[in-house]
Amino acid sequence: MILRTERPEDYDQVEELIRLAFEKEEMSDHQEHDLVRRLREAPDFIPELSLVCEVDDQLVGHILFTKIKIVADHQTTASLALAPVSVLPKYQNRGIGSKLIEEGHRRALALGFNSIVVLGHAAYYPKFGYQKSSTYGIQLPFEVPDENSMIIELKPGSLKCQSAKVVYPEAFGIV
Image (tube, rainbow, N blue to C red; front, side, top):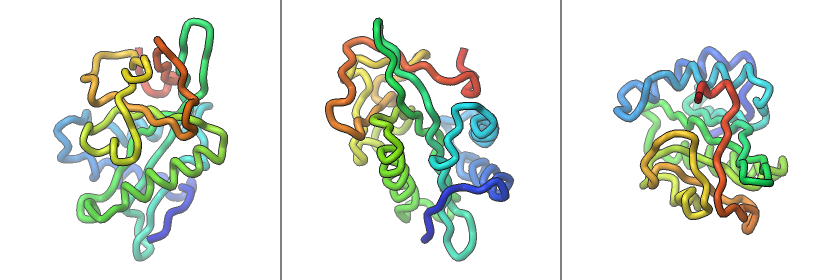
């Protein structure tokens, strides 16, 4: 298993990987591959935080972290959104997603990011340290069950919000 930074020549294969990974997911609009394409073209794209996993020279996993903001009354904090993590169906449940998340966290912290927001499965992300974002008084700009809106402090104590909202870049398509 090799984890590395995604390269432009990987883009088409990664988009197909993402499409296949979410193809049977019920809680999906099945447009995650289009989201990744838009995010790559956006000014908030961080190439070092778009990672792939190779097994036997085949791309089997991908993860992307994109700059976002957490905005409180008098303070704006830079953060990241994890969206999406994708693993080809036949490679799921082998720890690939976990390795991508852990490596992404390591790289994000090294780049100076202290927190990451995710909209995801309530039973999956807490094992990596994610907590409900409401614990920090942070809300997403759309309705979502509380248990699916999560955040992690990569640097403990970095989130001192009492009431804040996540602001996504335009490329996310959130109005």
